[in-house]
Image (cartoon, rainbow, N blue to C red; front, side, top):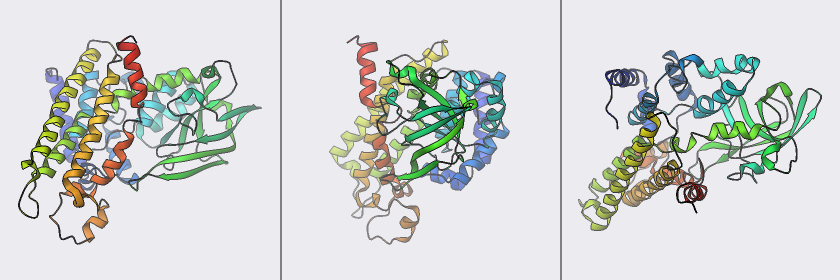
Length: 397
């Protein structure tokens, strides 16, 4: 971490004081345990951030944001995670907002940006399809011109929080060009439009965050198109440019490591501790060493950013190692808690009497966390895709 200036130190102190005063204890407990906050909890927290103009903390003052420096944005992310506050809604502030701000027309900006700034409008992303995930250029959802509208037919999948969303930004195919990327268009769609059906995808951890969304002759005004028809691929790449590093949260991994240590140092029913087992000790040391290496990589990427550049292809290595470390920490904690990891539902954990050693509070969600983290090497760019980037851009293969 670079040495902080007095202004940066004051910013962190102000942010810490705000979190301590405004973060609801129940919400803090849910985040600390690895659980999923409710929509009401998140909206209340976002409302508080909006009063300080921190909801859109990555936006410049020119665009209505607080005008934080790149280092202060990094410090914001780290402090939020360290104090167990929910991370800001990236779908709205880091994706929908910036693409509307950069490529939208004046009417689109006036309609949508205020709601994003204040956190009053929820967004979801319509990119992935059953046949277009990592190969996003294979998007097949069709949008055919009909007067002043498009008629949209198709399906999106793994759509995070579509059941909460007021609007979707989505990629559709408006022509069959020889180059697949040339026929993709970027649309903004009101989720209340007739013909849209949202069906839940309940994950293996029991959480409903993902959805599949069906479009059956959905009429979308052409005035909801961002930029030019057929140029959607350009806007999509703009949104994905900073996603890789954001998947890796060092404070989150540090919290996971602390939970792992607590799991192996707690007394078992017979008074023994797993930390005294050489196999568990060796595994824990390996995890700690990998975290130190990851911290070095993140610092290097941050230094490049502070020097006025952009994170290079090396950020793909950070993404690979960070997500793998997250998964291995979750597996280690599962192994350490054993049966105590099973009752991961909060209500169930409180009501079920067990005749084994009491589990730490996070034991109620460790199974859910383990199951969810299997997706970490897929979301934000799969590990296989990231390795291809490393082999081509860094190793020159």
